[in-house]
Length: 444
Length: 174
Image (cartoon, rainbow over all chains, first blue to last red; front, top):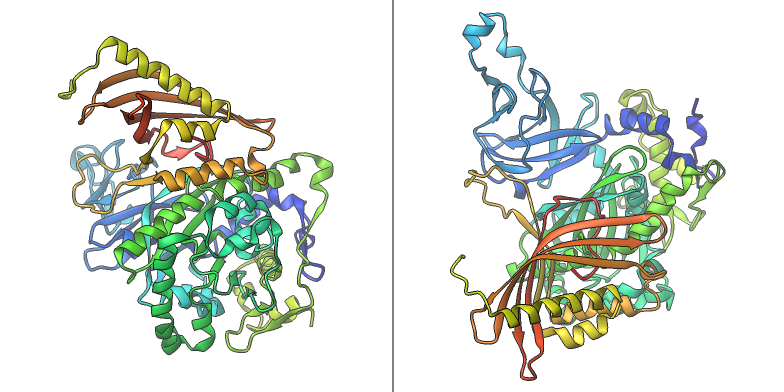
């Protein structure tokens, strides 16, 4: 049996390599993380009208998310209650019903079973349509971002995000909200789902080295880091982690990180114009965060970058491969030409032919695939950078490491990961006081 | 077909040879030579992947495609520079991108000296020890002759067949 408690050592900041390979651990992750956590499914901008729907993957479960006639949103498991076929095999659309292609059972967009071919002739009153609607999945939104949850006892999305909202609001709220540009690209990566999540949650360390070549040619604020030619100065950024493992890193004023030339100027002008609005709404500290580069991950597998404007879901496909969904993310009130320019750049850097995306792939795959070896798999991974320097930030309630490069958010991610795997239920997770995790994390 | 005017056999042959030469330059990693001699300064170089929709659905208004490549000369040249960098770890050791072209059609373009070229492409890409990836896509090109009579690529749109990219990424010249 797996010794779950030893997989992550919070005190020493290490993790067992087997968590990137082991089938048993993966099954436990599906049950205790993906069956329990809020998982990104869609955004308001992708389903603006009644009848609009998109499909998504939660854990390994396929769902369909539909805008209702009254404007509300519902999500359902994407399978027919009769013999289990998909009720839609497209990725998005507008519809009045979902009709199974096998025998033609038809469901309303509210999930109710509306029509069964030859119901009277063949079922002769036996079938109770009222109990055969699509299986509904709980869903809630924050700032237009919709997340689904399979656990009825989970806290609200609002509470699940918790202190992380302080940082989320910098971009998702302050200038009038954010929106996604779809459709997403969908690609394969032969790595464990946590590998890119940990990279996006807290790895500013790799940027100058892994992406040395792309940074050297792209221009923009991050280019100075190419080839590790410089260390970001003191005060150039922070590393942040919160209760349920959501975390981020901020590189101050590294705004349109990879945008050079006239498009870079356009983005910088937009940030400069909007910074005072952020200050007014959210205060001075967060006005300073606005226009900076954010690498972020909402636990467990929803990552995004502000300043590079990419938004991702790392959908697990077993412990050793993932499906990568990638959208563009922009501020809603940006002028169209700014939106287009930053979206184009997001695609150029982190899309299917992304100049930085390809750099990361090699690292992520070998980190997973080498665990095929029994000896390699026995090892542990190190995320100790910045240990001892983390502090509770009174303003946000989060734990902050005062360094542009550090592994604070890695450690917070895996602390939460361990807690989820150990807990029997959400009741178990919520029984400790809200600050207990900070004491554990800081070793106090 | 499609109101297009086929070119004479000698031009067809010339274009065919030129496309094979282009593929060979890419395969042999001669990207600087490729961009200097075969790419027009007004290039628009695109690759498109499409979201799956119900055919008759006209009510859903969000766009159904992603331009995974949308490069002008500036950005295309930037990608060439990335590949030339001694810090481009992903291309060191070298990788091999081998194009197989077929179903070649060559027609007169909209302007004199311009040609519309259709092709099917199959790419086998080998990198590292264990990775072999394959890609299938169509190409719609516009080539034009410059003052010296050399063909220059003015526009390329690649329609990628696979919705879910098993080849992981398209970080090569298509």
